[in-house]
Length: 98
Image (cartoon, rainbow, N blue to C red):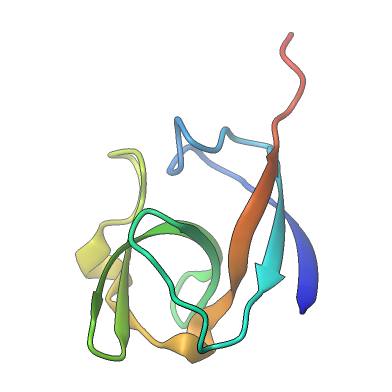
């Protein structure tokens, strides 16, 4: 199991993940079930490394969405496969409140 630490930039995952939050992700075996609503760290061919919520599964393809309207649309993200999934977000460390 591979563990990664990343930082979220932007507001596309509000309210679940605020800007400047750190995320801890875990690379899970491919045979572990992925469920709609889970948050994943992705390596997108166009947008690079992004954090998105799994919207639905279509056969071997996964569709992701932003939580907020300001993020990239599910259509723009497109269908992704297991090779694009870097890990599932297992913990969010929110930035300190002023």
